[in-house]
Length: 104
Image (cartoon, rainbow, N blue to C red):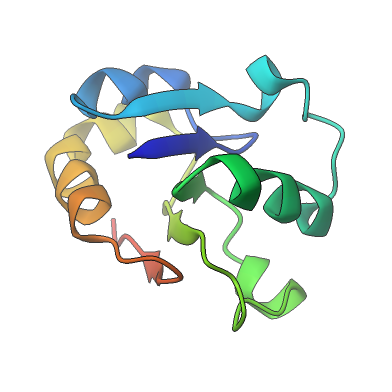
């Protein structure tokens, strides 16, 4: 799968997602894009958006989106590192258009 990490998603997490192609919004030059713009661009190139924005589903209409969205519980890499296996399993289970929040 092609995965985009939103701002705030720790880049070291990519090392825990073998078999997937991971890029960051920063690497794509999309750091300044607002959520709606980012979702539109991401959907054209990626299968999954990984974000830490827990308000995304309240701010955007996700009903018609094809991109899967995985929401992490924190931006803290040490805390996420402890649940990296669960995050990887969640990524592997995602279906197009699905929205999933990972618990801490």
